[in-house]
Length: 258
Length: 357
Image (cartoon, rainbow over all chains, first blue to last red; front, side, top):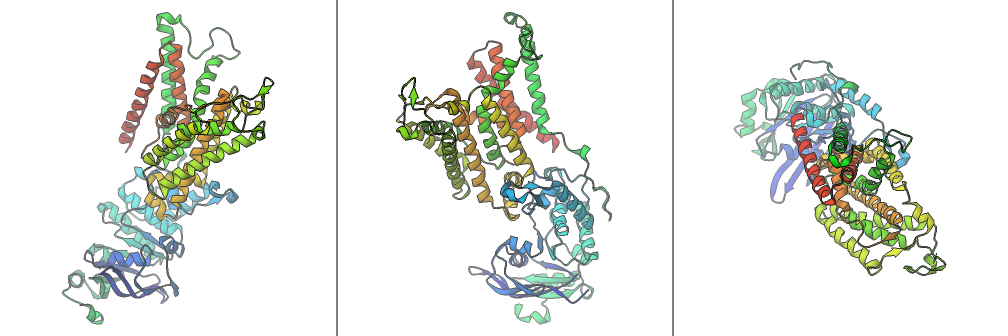
């Protein structure tokens, strides 16, 4: 694990009117690191993700991506900068197949002078899709199937496979297994392991303690809009994390958050 | 989903695994309908064993009854051109009701610029403008007609995409506005006596030539271009399309504009074919165009449908119309039968979709 910092936030804050959904979040993610973001409902996890991915505009604070200070106007900006997000609600078009979905909005094209009527390079997109799926070890029986005919796990895998296909610099997953069955969850977890082996940095928002303890290096706990703990996996256990989530404990360096 | 181990097994792109295209079912239905009329021709006592599709009297060089084939496709060609546009609108989960009146309005406006100066040596009795608008090159009325269509379509698209008015309402309003424009244009009087080159646009089998070449063009566009892919994506999941960076508003305006330009072109061809333009033209055309798309397997909730399907849907309507005339049944029965077939097509499609899921 190198010391290069992938993502850093300083005093990241979001207020919805009088509601302080996120307050002064200082966060750091190093290259190759997998970090879990945990916390109760409404603790600020998703708000935190939405500020980083440009879905919402932060109230104040700074964000650096690979030492460059960034300010995304929208989710597209963030994606172009290399942040791929797998949202809880899948952003997939049901009637299109796997390559179509992977490349939606950034198709590989031919005859570009035709403007909106430029031709799609289906062959290149298929090849890149297979490559991306291979990299993530995603299994889909036939990539020409439309998403409608796929199971929840396969859909989630397609969403995740986007990250690998586009050589993303940071992957963020917002509860990717919340709606999946046991086997499908296992499949998604395998993909996360593959990303770990490949040294791809990842932020995982999850409620699943076993998953977090199994897969992640570090755990950040949010409570009432503030970060209350920054725990190395080796130095903690499930009960300890729960104590932070519920408010029974607060990390020493976050004393003012209690 | 049983194998969850690491690895890349099961990653395939298998041509043979491509699903049975929806269009094959419509083709199958088309064949069945033809066979039914063929049988009716043999068994109905007053038909004297006539054949519906085959040339039994040796009138033509081919084995088919060419005259009937031509009529079948000719009578659906003009509405078919409209259907090519409405297909695209419906794929984005929209609807366009304004096309029928737009046909009439465009016919009136375009032909006003396509009139001939002298009719049998006398000045054109139906002249709308002065001499400056007489005997203009045929390109002028066509371009004016298409521009008018583009304007109406852009307004439709703007109301739907920017002001978020439901497509049904926006185009229903435009339906009335266009009929009004058609009546207002010449105070209800017909526009007649076009130039020879204008007439040529709708003469003989020209409507079929337009219909089929536009069908090929838009089939390619919908299937192989970014425009087509984004059209399907928007109808399939508008939110996902937006998240993927597609400019949904601009794209919708483009789709409505193209659809109305196709309807406007249908208006030019219709007036050329009839050699006259009247404010009442194109009645129910919008509904028949939608019916063609629906028989062709389109989903009104968007994301599904194709140009091939719509062309086959047009053929189904053409065959039914021609078949009823063939067995000497009244037009009233035709309407009832067409209505039933539209409903049956949707029921079958839904049943099939449910079984596949």
